[in-house]
Image 1 (tube, rainbow, N blue to C red):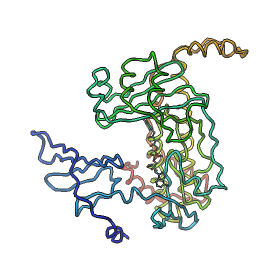
Image 2 (cartoon, rainbow, N blue to C red; image 1 turned 90 degrees about the vertical axis):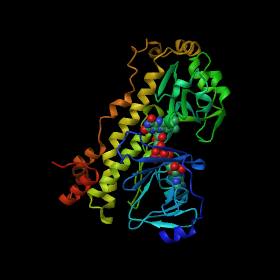
Image 3 (cartoon, rainbow, N blue to C red; image 1 turned 90 degrees about the horizontal axis):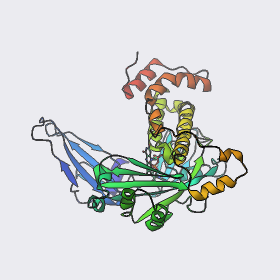
Length: 404
Ligand SMILES: Cc1cc2nc3c(=O)[nH]c(=O)nc-3n(C[C@H](O)[C@H](O)[C@H](O)COP(=O)(O)OP(=O)(O)OC[C@H]3O[C@@H](n4cnc5c(N)ncnc54)[C@H](O)[C@@H]3O)c2cc1C
């Protein structure tokens, strides 16, 4: 199959690195040289790290296909859109848009918050988690930093620090990207459901948002004025999907496709990565055998659900804390004071700490957790399961964990 793919691949001219980081003059002779490549169409940065002595090299973020013979990259694999899933209790498969069918012992679906797989897989049988509008929406965008760098009012926002501004029932964050060469922002605000949409392409000119932000910090406004537009999404309170595994027991969802997080959890990416680490170990702990896949996936789900629930709840709580930090705007206050519900007139809680709650989730090692608890959870699902020492040792070796 590899030969066929190589033969089909269209030749592309050798890439010129965007930048090359040379070692400092006093560095050891083994200090690697890093070539940075940028692929505009996919906005992907790929790093080629080369040891000058051994000439060994590693490709980091190898989302692109890399041909070491011609030193060229292509996006053939990354472009392989899955258009169909074959659920099976023996050999599930995915079908790519080009018609290629890939069969496997297990299929891990990580197709993001809009997960087409949820519908492709079992469009009728699967009950989708209810999407309840949270009463808030979020503007998001990212730009490269040329104009920001030249603007002394806000160029310091590129200094590597994530900053948060709190407003009445609203907050905004800026995120420097790519070593200060880009900036992203989010602005989350009250929305009764009429302003934004669930369509991820719902792009709005920035002017409307800036109007809403009148009176906010001039530094933030200066930075945001460089963004031409933003994506404007409704935030929904999404519970994790009820089903994480296909009926055949061999196709499993991870990340946003099965448990989206509110932006204020700052955990969507982290939990997706934890899922991936957990699932890899679960497969190893059932011996890395095709027969072990169904139990590995079920145990993965059982191990992960409580952690996901905690991260999701924390995102909601964080938003509430930040949005109630300042008194509501006058109009809203008037509305609240007219309310007959006495609880809405109660004085607000004392001001909470501004420290992001997400920090509480950092002191957790998913691989250690899975290694420690896998057997208990697996036996709750299959009382006959016996964890072989060799499987445990293999899993620990893969996770680089020393066993007692
Ligand atoms: C502005 C912003 C700030 C954020 N900050 C943080 C943060 O600080 N910390 C954090 O942990 N998270 C953060 N997140 C959230 C994080 O980016 C997501 O939760 C995370 O990317 C989810 O990972 P995923 O792999 O599940 O899905 P995604 O990263 O969405 O990946 C899904 C992939 O599947 C592909 N795909 C979809 N359909 C198909 C198909 N049919 N065939 C093939 N491929 C398909 C998509 O093209 C996409 O590449 C932030 C998000 C945003 C937008």
